[in-house]
Image 1 (cartoon, rainbow, N blue to C red):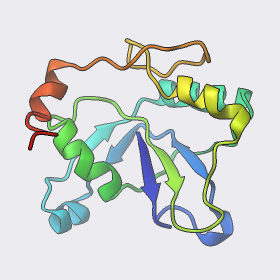
Image 2 (cartoon, rainbow, N blue to C red):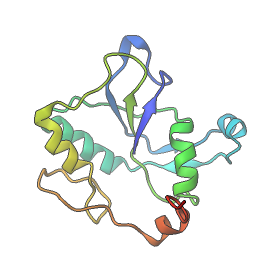
Image 3 (spheres, rainbow, N blue to C red):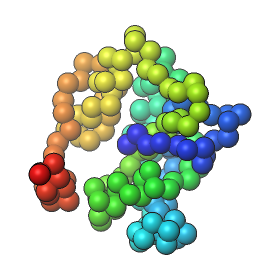
Amino acid sequence: MFVNDHLQNFPYSNLPAFCVGLADDYDAPSAGGGAFMRIPPRKLRGDRATAMALLEAGLDEGFDFAYSYEIESWDELSVPLHFLTPDGDIPIVPVYTNCAAPPLPRIPAPLRPWASATLRPPATGRPSTSSSSTTSPPISSRSRRCCRGWGRT
């Protein structure tokens, strides 16, 4: 899940373009954040194996990912996941993106095919490490249930 980082995890002096979260779990939201956002606090499971596979595949292809085992989450994870996975039973792999300070991240032209293929998970729900993947993510009955009515006018 690509999410924003508004200087909450990284200062200007050490601001990566992209940072893969390798934590075992994430507070989404924390008790204090939950009170502010009016969303019950909960811990969501991370998927370290998938996160590491994404990190290694990106590094192998020349994509300059940072990584962290300690990431503080706020509304960037809490709000969308509150609606997309109400039970909080789907492990997550957050990729934090610098959206606050120039230079803003870009995907270099030679890496765009890799990024496009890697970020399109195969039917297993895990990122592909091959640029030949063309499989779209499956839409589960849970996704249809929690997203009912979206896009309707």
